[in-house]
Amino acid sequence: RDPVDNAISLLEARKAYFGNVSEWYSFKPRGYEKVLHLSPEHQTLWQVITTNDAIREQCKELSRGNFLDVNYRDFCNAPKDLLQTLSGKAGFEIDPGASDIPFKHKTSPRRNEIDWDLIQREIQPFLVSQ
Image (tube, rainbow, N blue to C red; front, side, top):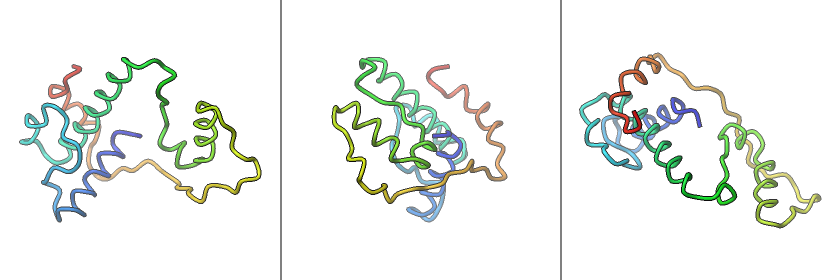
C-alpha cells in the first residue's frame, strides 16, 4: 500500500479510536520511542515505512514460494484475481461457476494539505535502514 495513504489511514484511526491524533495506534515497531517527540504525521509515516522495512527483511529469510507480495490497490480493485493466484499456489482450482466475490473497493491516492514529501525527507534520520 502507498505509505502516505497508509499513514493517513493511521491518523484517521487515531482520531476515531482515541478522539485525537496524538495517541499511538496499532503496531509499535522497534525504536518507536525515538519518534514520539515528532508530529503525528511524522510518527505515522515513520511507522509505516519502518513496519514495511521490517516485513521486507523478514521475507528475505523465506523462500520466494512461501510468501506473496500483494499490491493493495490491485487487491481492492480485483479481489477475485488474488483469490485465483492464491488458490493456484495452494494447488486447488476455484469453481469457474462460482459467483463473484462481493467485495470490491475502489481506491484512489489519498492526499491532504500536508507536505508528505517534506515529512518523508525529515524522517530519514530516524529510519533504521538509512
